[in-house]
Length: 189
Image (cartoon, rainbow, N blue to C red; front, side):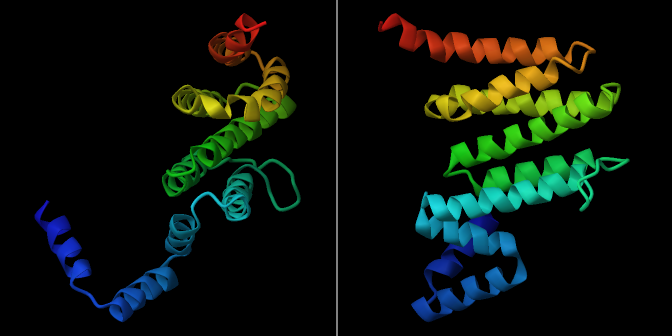
C-alpha cells in the first residue's frame, strides 16, 4: 500500500507537461500501455475497440496456426491463454471485447480438435476452461449474449465432432446460457 501511495503521490505532484512525458515514455516502452491509454481516453469507441480485439485475435491465432494457416504441431497453450488474459485486463472497461477474444480462443481450440483429432487432453481442458470463463463473463454481462448467440450455435456443431465428453460440456454450458437468456424473451410472448 505504501508503494502505491508513494507512486500516486508522485503522479499527483507532477505538472501537466511532466505527466505527458511520463505517459509518452510508458507508451514507448510497451504497446499494451499505448492501447490502454487509447482505450481509457476513447472509452468504448467501436473502431478503436475493434482494432484492439483484432490485434488480440491475430496474436491468439498465431499460437494455434502457422502463417500458412496450418495448425502448429505444438500449440503454446500457456502463451495463448496469457494473451487472452492480458487483453482481457486491457479490455476491462469493454467486457464484450474481452468475451469476444475468449470465445475466439475456444473456437480455435475446437477447430483444431475437430479437424485434427480430439485426443489432445491439454487442449481439451484449456479450451473447456476458457469456455467456462467466457460463460461466466456472459452471466456477469448478459447484454452480450445475443452478440455471441450465432457463434455459440456454430461452436456446438464443431464441438459435436470431437468426443471425450467435450461436446456434452459445451452443450451443457450453452444450455445454461439459453435457459437464462432465451426464456426471458419467450415469457413475454
